[in-house]
Image 1 (cartoon, helix red, strand yellow):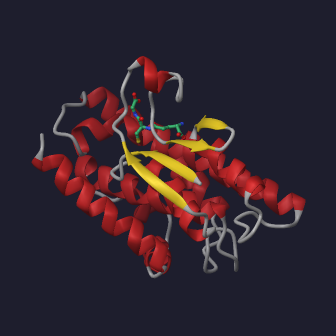
Image 2 (tube, rainbow, N blue to C red):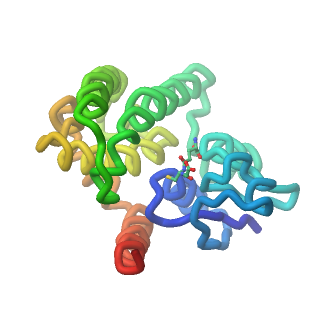
Image 3 (cartoon, rainbow, N blue to C red):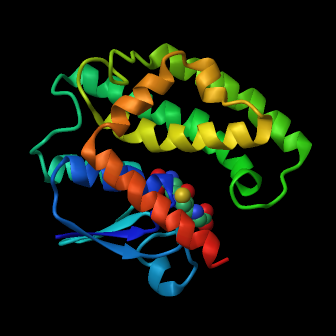
Length: 216
Ligand SMILES: N[C@@H](CCC(=O)N[C@@H](CS)C(=O)NCC(=O)O)C(=O)O
């Protein structure tokens, strides 16, 4: 039995949870905010979430977790069978995480948590995130899924990240930069949200967000 540690407001946590649900892997959730205690640092080297407990030990980094799950639980595959298409799927995931999500992350403190981000940072993030999104538009097939006619790990990753980047850019720039750079993204997000497991992740996320802001 897998245990997933983290909080449901995290897009990286929701990526792993969405994968576990879509692959029909039995798992339990342990609510845990990122923290720098010795106990957690032994399980996740920077105290970040998500991480999982497996029968062999703890594993952190959502992408390492996704690939572990795919190999340990081959039923309901999330990666294409063809080796080149698997490479394309990994290319897509690496691109969205390195060149879109990690860049946009620098504005979340103001967009979501009521902090302040300097104008210089906002301008720098905008330039880089727009370049990342333009690149993503070149990789995204949207026919109807991210990489073609099969739901895949690319969708598992794109959905929680693009949801957050859309929200954050709308808050900071008054424009949803994702929608601006990727025509057809709204219909795509609705398609993913029509999946029962995405609805479950979304419902849990909304409840976690409400609890998070109530307790602050
Ligand atoms: N590369 C990591 C990123 C995970 C991550 O950034 N998690 C955030 C929550 S969304 C976190 O734990 N932040 C706390 C921190 O940076 O100390 C992954 O893919 O798992």
